[in-house]
Image (cartoon, rainbow, N blue to C red; front, side, top):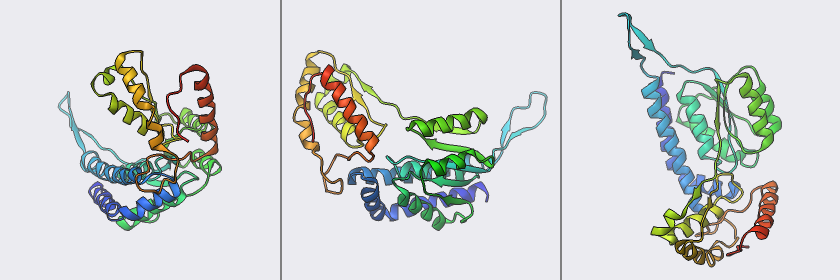
Length: 293
């Protein structure tokens, strides 16, 4: 399929994602445990991924790029797909990251075998269904469900030309690291990092810092993509700390499907155990400002 046709398919997929916003949001809330606000943002991000990679397909794959010819020769750079890509996505962004990985593989001219997180398989299958309705042939994109026992043989298969993944858990990271060591030029790895805020932001609007930290702490509870705040003993920092005191009560634990709900429950027990250990460590080393239950 030419690059321009692949781009058109991705644009149709983006349109279908927008048309099915309500159904996708309901599925993300029900299966992924996300809040309504987060689910809407995730569908929008999936749409953005499709449109972005559609543009990239037209820019990078439609026509060869002419390079300089130092000796008067004509040099061209042509980009093409490598073969079959394995896409492994996480549970904390079950639609956007899954869709983005698949869209990237398709835009580059590859076939894709996609494995959603074992906690959110229905969201992955729904995304693949939309790609197929947009015009992707059935044999070009396949979706498989399961845990690491499915992912391990998938990435280890010598017929896999590349892997796109977002890893957090040590077994999965070690598995991909071994794969990368053998095929270092064919792996794409996205690592989540915690951000940190300093006192300069506090000088302007401490209430904004309070809101940002509460959102960051509770909206994706259990996710590796969370941020922390660093405050020293400045007057502005003390004002922000006063703002934190009532903030956790606004993020009380309820079912994420309720309108206005801002807190996401821990999706997996290991994350909950890790959070409990972190809380115990902070109780011994820091001052408690507020607590949500």
